[in-house]
Image (cartoon, rainbow, N blue to C red; front, side):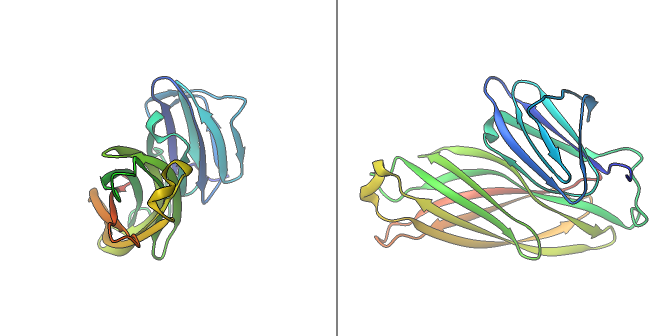
Length: 233
């Protein structure tokens, strides 16, 4: 097996727990001891199969070495987990000096406006679709006026150090109706593109405000926050 390229540490925050799934382009290895400057533990409930890891983080931290790129990190309870990612010292590729690896993440979603006084919260399915890359889905309940952490890594891209690469994120929102909000109507949808530029040594935050169409003429609106960062930093 080649040397590991990256690491992921899932740090539990306070009481509670969160299930998670990590997907990579190469093998994943669960480790104990210290990783990325943090103490990490191994648990019997965490399972690794090739390029996929499934586990549960409680009040401590779980750590993984990644033999390849990080495709996605999905969290059941993003408010309970701080995700730490980085490269492992000594990792090298033939083209390491010419390319860097840039990760695009969906960090949080903010309630901007609802569809009327009968709606106490939005039940959302959010799809983050990078054209020419990966798509990720998130489902959550977003109370009126609130912000929820997402903490989802959408995809990684190799980018020339001497240039940049344009991409487009299409944020697709489906607002699902629940029995308590039956009078607000059928599920509503919205979709909005936002252009991004991938470049080495150029961390960015990009927002995308998505209107949620309504057949009653009173669309809702949410804002999704994305970060773009160089994993080699």
